[in-house]
Image (cartoon, rainbow, N blue to C red; front, side, top):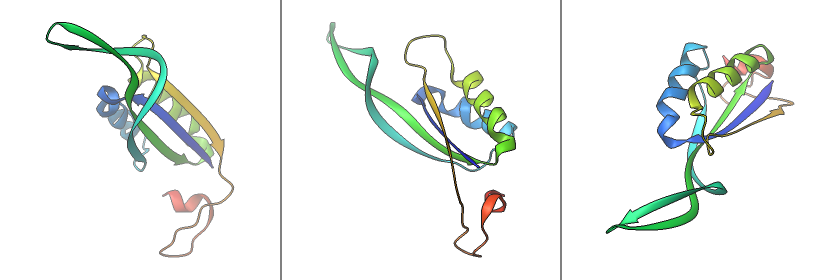
Length: 112
């Protein structure tokens, strides 16, 4: 099992969610987060541009069986990318065990 963590633009969340559903990744968690990165967003108030280093993003946490890893990554990169600085990052790590609380099942079957 793998854990895929993605930080994406909030404006691309709907596209990413739909792309994940198309590749049968139907369960994941997400949070609204604020971070600091290379992109500098500017806000205009009364004709004056104010720069801020705080960038609003959406953080996705997805645990998939190994056979779903590549299609998950492909779905995120194809739907979240704009080609501009600030599109986000994807991190992949291994999951040693998963346990379904309700039944006590363990392993990859808990993800179905």
